[in-house]
Amino acid sequence: MNPVRISVNLEQYKYADGTVALADLRLQVARGEFAGILGSNGSGKTTLLKIMDGLIKGYRGEVLLDGENVTKLHPRDIYRKVGLVFQNPDDQLFATTVFEDTAFGPRNMGCAEPEVRERVLSALASVDMAEFAAKGIHNLSYGQKKRVCIAGLLAMGHEILLLDEPTAGLDPMGEYRMMELLTRLNREQGVTIVMATHSVDLVPIFLHQLHILSRGRLVRGGTPEEVFTAPEELQQVKLRLPHIAELIYKLKHEEGVPFSRIPLTIGEARREIVEALGR
Image (cartoon, rainbow, N blue to C red; front, side, top):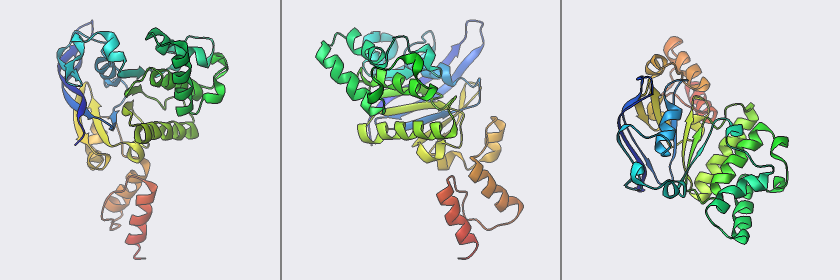
């Protein structure tokens, strides 16, 4: 079993106006894991990511990074390991060119210029943006900007990426390419990833673990297969099954088609349909 990188044991966090944002929340993220925090808008996903990244303090409870309390760590010690990618890349990018923006972190860490260049080019290659190093930030597409944000964190040596709605604002092909990129970083480079999202259709294909967040509380967790076995519970937290699973569920429970299980992907659904048809 892989060691735990991030451990959250949160009793309560309130916004400035006294509203309880998160409560009774416990989760762990292991090394090399690709985890998702799934919830509707306003469920507390972004707040949870900021707490995990050390940006928000003043909560009751404890968040550990490699066994150390993040509230007692120097920000530099946190940012050497963990990086947060905001939902809107324009909130994160500020330099004139792709190279300069990606180089900001390594330079701020005190790296010599040859090392900065090596880190930047390697990070840009990891997100398929090496050929755009000299390109102006304002000339990039929305999806390209998101990739540059990720590159900026990789260039700093981050081993853990926290991503807030990384597919938001992208077209369907852009969504799929972003998820392919994150999967490659996870599988080939061993980057631990925690992704906040409300896109249920992407989750079953890519994620190892899934945590359902509703009104600041975790209501369900496990593998996607374990989480998506209870559509009634998902409806209660303003979520739904992935489209293909919803179709098979209705065919099974409303039309009496003898499916043995509820598939989550097209490939799984195809096998179930062929078996149900007796072929």
